[in-house]
Image 1 (cartoon, rainbow, N blue to C red):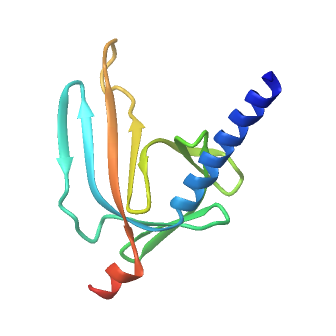
Image 2 (tube, rainbow, N blue to C red; image 1 turned 90 degrees about the vertical axis):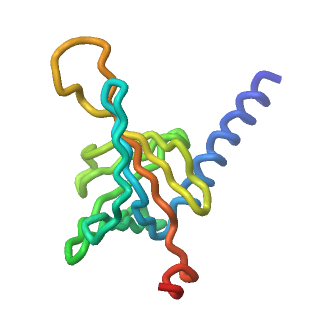
Length: 140
């Protein structure tokens, strides 16, 4: 009985990771960025050409495009709630907690280092993305 419960749990976890890996595929545009610093919040939602688009491919590569620039990273989804970016050698670059991922919206949270020394500091950034579909690009 215990083996059946463990097997069911493992299948459940693997299915959720696979589901997230399928949902992240495609092109995402940045909608807004919210910064939280020790109780103060600043939201930047003034979209311009300096904001990136991210294209996630099924082979684990993400392309970040901004104006005429582009960068290429590898990515992995861990435990269905963590997204990590890796360089070409597999070294860790950035990590995000996935707060929401469905077919239309991606919300990522990244913890930031404190600006000042001392305890009881909370700094993080939340990025909101919407998926670009062929329908939305045709209407532009």
